[in-house]
Image (cartoon, rainbow, N blue to C red; front, side):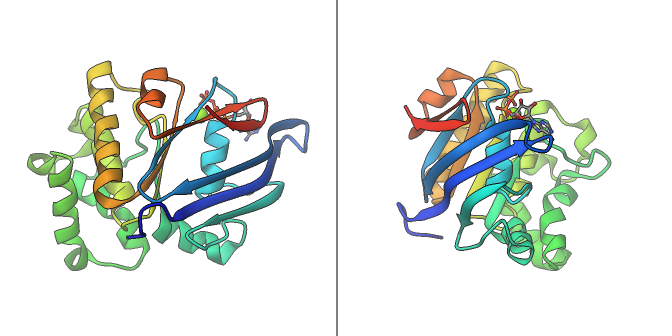
Length: 225
Ligand SMILES: Nc1ncnc2c1ncn2[C@@H]1O[C@H](COP(=O)(O)OP(=O)(O)OP(=O)(O)O)[C@@H](O)[C@H]1O
Ligand SMILES: [Mg+2]
């Protein structure tokens, strides 16, 4: 774990366009994220929240500017692969789990990608499911779970390889209010307990206000609120 307060991810003057430059989404964005903090990326639909998360997670590359996550550069392929495997966990709005697989099998996927087998990972999977209150569901197939249980499974999967940066793209967007609150509380608790830096995209004010910092995304720029 990194010491609290240490910079885990940074973006400098990042620009991102789509459609061969016709759509400018981010225009000179700079941002630092520190260990143990929960940062809200807050902005209207289409403002570029997901785009910025994808850049930080090495799922997409910027047009210009620099990025560093745990000392790795998501713009370079070898570095990006390591970053996705070891440094970053991603939680999507619609969990993106494999419905036919069990909770345990889904959570293990990132470990398999990192070359670890069932024996090496059983204990870690057990700790994670207990942490999110899903111990009794470990052997159930994801297709049989509720929305909140699926999202908790997705959080475990994102944490499987002990990332220092957890990127969550509207993780409560598909959930009812009460379940959404529980998932949000869980993310905050993980940041506090494990020193994971969490960047959470949301357009819900109540979640943004409960984060340590709010970074507003608007007109291609970010600003601290
Ligand atoms: N692959 C793409 N090709 C073209 N335009 C894209 C692509 N991906 C995103 N965009 C555009 O970039 C802009 C920002 O999209 P993004 O998904 O980052 O917004 P967002 O803030 O996450 O919105 P939401 O709250 O609806 O999820 C939008 O106008 C979107 O249409
Ligand atoms: Mg989005």
